[in-house]
Structures are given as C-alpha cells and as structure tokens.
Amino acid sequence: MADLESFRASVRSWLEENAPKSLQGKAGDPLATFWGGRKPIYPYPDSKAWMEMMAEKGWTVPFWPKEYGGGGLDKEETKIFNQEMARLRLPLPLSGFGITMIGPTLLQYGTEEQKKKFIPEIVRGEIRWCQGYSEPNAGSDLANIQTKAVADGDDFIVNGQKIWTSYGDVSDWIFMLVRTNTEGIKQIGITFLLADMASKGIDVRPIKLISGNSPFCEVFFEDVRVPRVNVLGRMGGGWEVAKALLGHERTMIAGMGGRTTSATGENPIEAAAKKYIGQRDGKIADAVIRDRMAQIQMDESCFALTVQRNSDSMKAGHNPGPESSMFKIYGTELNQKRNELMLSIFGPECLGWEGAGFEKRELELCREWLRSRGNTIEGGTSEIQLNVIAKRVLRLPD
Image: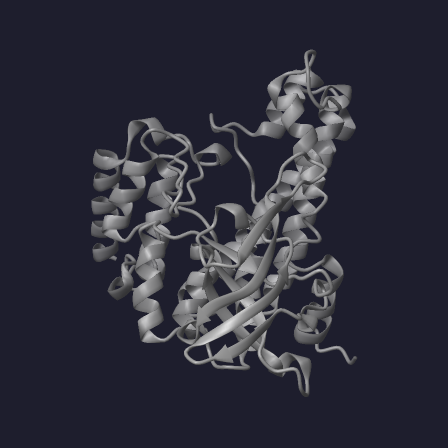
C-alpha cells in the first residue's frame, strides 16, 4: 500500500509540474482528441508537446509493456494514473484505433518483429490505423468477404474493395481481412493482413453521411503488393484474430455510452435543460424531462461501473469476450437515448441545418443526433450482437 501511495504522489507531482495548463480541464472535450499519424492535426497548440512528453514516459498507453514503449503499469497503478489524470481533468494525450483495437491484437497475436515495429510507433503517435473489414456484400455476414490476396513470392497481390472504413482518408496503415483460400468453409480461407495506405494501387474515397460529415470511406485495392511478413497470426487464421479484435472494437464503441461533460466540466444535458426549459422552485420545469434526465444519469452510472469492472479484468490479462457485445448494445443505445433527450430539450431550436437564426451548438446537435442513428449499426448491428449473446453468453441452442 505504501508503494502505491508513493506512486500516486510521484504521478500527481509530475502531472502538476508538466501537464500544460492550457489542457487542464479539457477532459471530455471531443475537440481535444489527438489521433497522431503522418499527417497530424493538433487540436490545441500544446497538444503536440503533451503527447510527446507522455509518450516519453510510456503514458500514452500506460498499461502496455515497457519493452515496446508502454508504461508497464499494473492494474492498480493504471487505476491510480487514471484517477490523477481525472483530478486535473486532463485529456488523453493520444487516441485512435492503434491504441483501442490493433495494438492489443498485435500484443496477443503479433510476432516479436511485428511488435517491435508497430507498437512503439503507436505509443509515440507516429502511425494512425484504419480498419478494413466490411465490404459491399460482407457487412453483418463478415465471413463472406471477397477481397483476395494471392501469394506472389514474398508478397501478396491484393484486389478488392472495403467500405465504411472509418478515417481511411487520413490513416497511414490499414488492418484488414483478405481471402487467401476459396475452398471449404468460408472462415478458414480468411487471413488478417496489415497494409501501408501509401502503397501503389490503393484508392480512398470518402462517403458523405446524412449528418454532413465524412468519417467513412470506400477503399479500393488494385494489384496492391503487401509483404507476406505483414500477416498477423497464421495464414488462414484471420477469423480468430478478427473476432479477438472485434471484442476490443465493441468495447471501444460501447464507450460512447459513458457520461459526457462539457469543456467546462458541467453536465451538458442539465445545462441545456436550464437554458431551454427553465427552472421552477429550483427544479427543471418539465417533470417528464426531469424523469428522463434522472434515468439517463442512473443508466450512465451503472454502465460506467460495469465497464470499469470489465476494464480492470482486461488489464489483468483478460481479453474482451462475448460480454463486449452486451456493452456495445447498451452503450450505443444509451447514446441514442441521450441524443433524443437533447432533441426534446432543445425543441425547434435543434432543427436548423445552417444559416442565421441558430446558435453553433444548436446546429451541431442536429448533426450529432443524425450521426448517432448509425451507432447501433457500426461495429456489428444490435441484431448481430444479440445473436452473439444468445450463443456465446447464454449458450442457447441454434
């Protein structure tokens, strides 16, 4: 216990002395997110320095092994680290699919050479990843992928198309599923491959959503050469690796169900209700809205505690299992309910799309609500998750 208290004191002292004052209080601010990569966009002037100093200590991913650039912290130390970050309301120095998805999968399935190459680059924010799973005819039926990788000496020649590739237009590398065998059971012919997005023959085209944004892309592969050493796991073993990564992805997506705060630390739902509905006798004037607000807050708290228990288990060496499907359903549906509540609070002020007459936040909310409609589709639809829960958690018969 004394060692942990000493560790807490050292973390607190270092953060107070080194964390940029301009970033303190920015936790929960989506604009503070930094993704790294070859073409970095720094959200704040101090974001670069913040990321670099944290990477130097391994604290961009504090619980990853030290030999690959991580912080090497155990479960209790990681919890203390997170508490001290939260105390100063500091934003994460680095985010992205490298940390939440492919990094943990590399640590589990990667060769020593792959770990030494990619993990330090992820920790230092030098590489940004995107995911190449879905195809026009292989979304929920992921085993139906048709993108082919044909062996040619020390390389594969890759041809095909991926779709709904988040941030494919700004990413450096892609982790993808390819078909290396067309005979027998579909899953057995799938291989997990890592490819440089700068490779000749890759064409990326953004997809514009109803919200007006373009986080998703189509990615086309035409005679793209990818070294065979970039296979993650074994040839034909991509389905196993893909399922392991999906556990990490669904846990990440479930995070959108967590409690939100504004850049100033206040509850945005409560602040909106006070502004657009008003108060009577010290309470939000609309009783129905009050009930919905209370339900959301209770749901957020219960969900956060449950996810934390799972997170603690993962940091002790447990990889996400079928329970991630439960988190994915609950977290995404909770985020949709939160957006719908905000619509009810804002009323007609949230229906603007552009132009005069609406505040910036009112225009943003309309787009956020539209974007949230995709939450229960991306990362595997809720129907797919329910099937996973039925088979792998409840052990129900087919």
